Image (cartoon, rainbow, N blue to C red):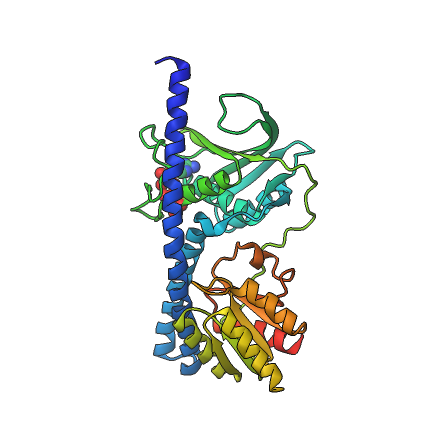
Length: 399
Ligand SMILES: Nc1ncnc2c1ncn2[C@@H]1O[C@H](COP(=O)(O)OP(=O)(O)OP(=O)(O)O)[C@@H](O)[C@H]1O
Ligand SMILES: [Mg+2]
């Protein structure tokens, strides 16, 4: 086979692999979304039960353990959702050096691994979703750390580069090349073809357990950004991953509002409140859970299973001079009007409407820019009672 024919076959193989990965991604996205709803009911009910049994009982410690396991399941579901189509990137001009510096510091915090960053001045901003790129790089940094069980240094180097070769699978243009290098165990040549396959892991047994999803997620995120990830490894000497991401024409935004997380201590208690709340969700178990939570917190709850009905109920309450104090809208409703259209109609009826959007897709642009769409707050599913109670109280009482 001559060199050009071989290159064509390689590219066809690569395209086939990408297609395979995309169909697995779509499938796992569907499952992850349903699973996330189940998890919302599981975690919500456990956290509510914990409220009722009091602390320091045998029962509360069993419930705490169930909740801790559900939190691990929640992380896994988040990763699956990012991997799937539900995690379409919300791209903005990004300063990759600072995003990756923060990510690597977070990934290696408390470990015996150091991180060294290298870059010249003037690394171009990239056109990326900072949160997703953070996730992709986190997976690579964790792998690098896991390859050096007795400690070491992960080197991350940035370089501006221009692609103009017809042999590249990337369109010509300006890119940022990020190299992540370790001096770990290396990858055996017979595995190198498989490492991006979902569920391929050599960490199934032993001290560190792996799901084999880390690299498939990184691969999927980087492909969704129009970038490329490649690897080069020497057994016993170390591994370097190269990630190429398209540069942005515009300068980077100064701040990246990554998902704000509430800081909840085990000793914290929920914030009680008063008021009438309308909840819209297409899942009966979520309506029931949210109703129970609201009852426990001191609110009166009313329900709608889709947007048209929510708008009807909201209007009827306004007309009867007994308006709702807040509405909680699910973003995606199967076969009905979802949160985005519903808030637009509610705003038209009542410009002062107080609405919280709830969704399992934390990467969705409506979630990322919820204020632009008319919402006051966001609760990402699955939610637990303390965080939920704080956010609702702030919205209802304008604090
Ligand atoms: N830096 C590295 N050094 C050595 N081997 C690596 C490195 N990165 C990946 N691998 C190999 O590729 C496999 C797949 O990696 P991937 O991140 O997808 O899954 P995992 O690390 O096994 O599990 P998970 O990331 O879900 O915890 C690993 O099990 C390991 O064999
Ligand atoms: Mg991994």
